Length: 309
Image (cartoon, rainbow, N blue to C red; front, side):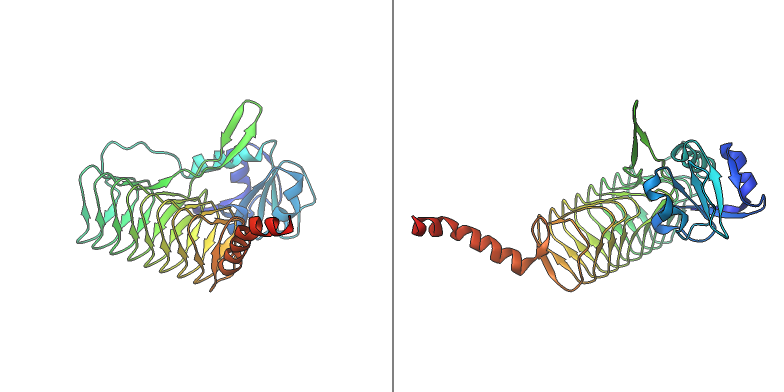
């Protein structure tokens, strides 16, 4: 998430009420999660295990719960609770604004687009030309939809990320200030849910087609001309490259990459990153030919045991 204007380190520290290390006028452009940070961004870290990763990341401002040596060219925000203060910044720069109409006045809707009854279009949504949103589609604030997109009934774009910190009193949610971006010529089936990024974008690439009842987690990037069949569940921060096919009931873990033109057969659990241009099956995932050979050999075990007897 980039801020509407460049802020100074001193201004950001004042918003969250913390000490800082670095020049008062150190430039702050935005805030992001560690996997998508760029220079000028704030990243937060609250566990010693990840201090080095955050301090050596592309982010130039680190919101951290211990005063450590500051890398050259960077600045620190010293907080007793970085998770809480990251939420404070999200609420400050991307606050929730209640709606009082079905289609917000700030929404921009292109020529030839049809929006069926009972849809909700939130604040600052942009929808391109010649789209069709069937009844009861929900598009949360700040979402971006390209041209020639079809979205079927009951689909929700822009729900919060499933991202929590466990505390003694329960689970504390990391607030979502990101967006959903749907590129041109995408088709989305009924009852799909595509969560917005925590601070960045969840993106569906041009020409991709998604079946009914598919879930796409926060900050996931799906490439161009992919096919995703029903009841697939894609975790957060996954990268799916161009022309990938995921058949029904595929599930993935978070933070992995599925290479271009990979084919993942139904009911596979994608537990790690996989190369493109190959076919995969099973849990844990393996190349489908190898997995099917293994299953064939398992069926032979009773005969082998009988021969041994």
